[in-house]
Length: 432
Image (cartoon, rainbow, N blue to C red; front, top):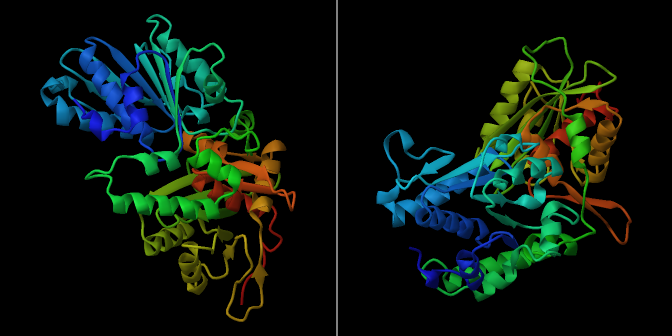
């Protein structure tokens, strides 16, 4: 059994509560951790029970199972089933015949159809579409089970926000801001004074980097009505018509958009567009690499170029991307193809003969326009859906322009660059 002295007060309250529960918190406070403990303790104390956990992606689903299993191995190792019922990447079964099953919901939630649970856990539910909720909640229909929700806010008007308002007093609502948690968490071996001070300093830097609305949503746990989705769910669903082609035709016109993982991030994305048909762009490939060096990213681009023979390669030359951009600019195979797309002006060759300035607003508006006009077909992929869905905007009070941001935008950032091939006027020009 977990030592309550190691938990924050809000975590203890969540752990002890019986009934429908909603955790609305800032990021990185331990909401998924305490929900994992709660799941583990429930299946230990309720024989023959079933918990269904729904997450946005397969990786998130697996992470929750890993966290539950880790807790069980430390506290109830002898209760874990073995043999044919031994734990897998998405399911844990106990000797008392209770189980936890984690499923990625994808775009529609169909992965939950046919399952019945005593507890339904929805992780980061603020980002779930209405289609997912239609499929998810009936899993409790025949059991009258409990619904446990946990999420950071993502705008207003969605299912999570409606539950948070709690008009019918269905839920026990528990809130926790990242600032309050970091300041008030008890000092321990795992939460030292040094770690607390570093965490609070990080928040101060985030407050400088992010807009007031962004910071309030991400770290203060406040629903912000002025933050809105750029690509609504219906538009994304309508645009996801493409299938990966069976073969690569060297006569076709392929373009690559790359988003380089920033410092501390894990994933770099490579998005490939086929512009052979001038009337419609076809999204033909989405690749993601994790925890790769800049030299490895460069090698991957060279490898892809030899396969697809790109007409142009669009890359962000800011931050971590500048190293890859410079390598591509010096390489014989890519120096005439690489184009920097960034929020600032940067010379593209040593003679400073050509400069490129593309605002984030421009490239996102371009993709939005293409989708609205049915001039692009995107690959059917849950991660692509979630990345586009995660992009939000707010209106800058001074410039009255849109500001785009999000915390799962790496695929979207690569895709908007690749789709820029429809707007860039220099597609047939080359650098000296």
